Image 1 (cartoon, helix red, strand yellow):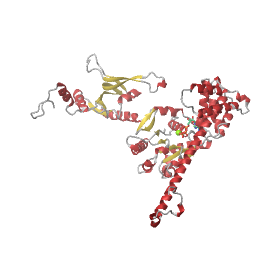
Image 2 (tube, rainbow, N blue to C red):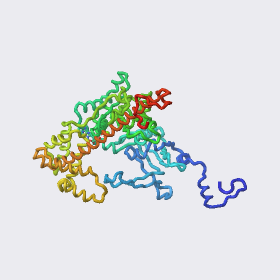
Image 3 (cartoon, rainbow, N blue to C red):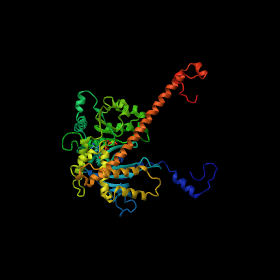
Image 4 (tube, rainbow, N blue to C red):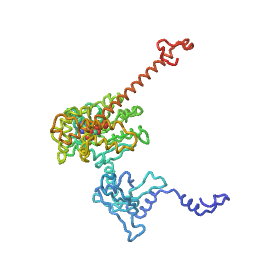
Length: 541
Ligand SMILES: Nc1ncnc2c1ncn2[C@@H]1O[C@H](COP(=O)(O)OP(=O)(O)OP(=O)(O)O)[C@@H](O)[C@H]1O
Ligand SMILES: [Mg+2]
């Protein structure tokens, strides 16, 4: 490589260049082969089995408590090669808010262990064998040496199965691949059916639908129909579609934990189809995993945005194609049932069950206020009399649960920072104007809100006892602000839909005109004559 190139051409004899080229042009390397050769030479009486770590991570399996891996390091006897080759890193807390101190972690690049599993002992080498300059794939292998080779298969099988199972995690599909999410699992663990307020009959039906499905494999088989279903939760934002899905996930994980023979059912949670391989690639991956994990609960949040027009036929292929989807229960949530293709929402064994989650009625709003009363019962500085619940329900007509939640949270926050009592709305308006003197043009809406607040303050619903309750005072203000915000939003939406209807109408009219124009008799076009029915529509003529 270096020096002359075989002809009479002479190199410049640049030392650095020679070193560089010499270093970079080795024989083909294969670290795996090098290690196998060395291990067979060193342990002629033991059998060697090589297991890629991405299939079975024996060290992780041991640190989960299923085996022990004792490092066989002897840096005193052999200061160069006696110690393992490893990286030490500090892993900061995943979220600053967690208040955790972070942890130190080690990554083994080359190490030797005595591995004990179920009364068997093996020698285990773990080595990072990445060859070449590419960072992917990352090849780390386990090299297992033993005289009891027949036991190795059991170890590989158990460690692999352990690695493929979830451990307080949920499978989430995002950016093109399945990932285990601990965060979603933690939030699911907090979701309880008791906290979800729904019309009693509907709540029972929702739960029964899912439980009966997973209990009903034999019923489906006897009826000779495929054991698969789809359910849609639809309705305006903020009324419990997502918390119902989470409460259901929680209940499904709990199945069988009381010793009954019910199968625990995992959830596969799809966030988006967008990926480096396109939505078709994502759908293939999603359904392959669902078939593997079945029986399972397959969740599509915002179904209408996931199954857009361009992936619809592919989606339907996966749902009712040739491969069996037995044991898969799909649930999709959407705000816009009308945007879903009828092929998806109306055909049996696709999404044939639908539940509407409306804004809460008066009784449900009272229940929701009672839920907050219960939540706050131990808090000394918040007075929450029973009469407050119907009073809140009375002034929150057309509010979603999420808006009601916002009213409670905002009021409690205002009370916590002492904002509510410190000054009157008029004072705050003055203060805010003074603060914003240099902040550019004022937002007129802000002042209308503040004026509204002062009006609310003057209002009383005639319940003089309640009028003294700080939380009630604050709730009335927050609810007034939220209502105004809601109405603004509704007005904008209405305007938007009127605009789109108008555009559609105009397009239809254009099309009609165009078609009529095509039908004009040749002579009339030639002489530029107006076609009678549309006289005057072309103003520039
Ligand atoms: N039926 C309900 N019972 C009790 N709390 C509710 C209910 N619905 C909504 N909430 C409260 O509102 C929050 C938002 O609700 P959720 O996320 O379930 O709404 P959603 O219907 O999924 O809305 P979107 O259509 O915007 O996704 C919940 O975390 C919960 O605190
Ligand atoms: Mg939701």
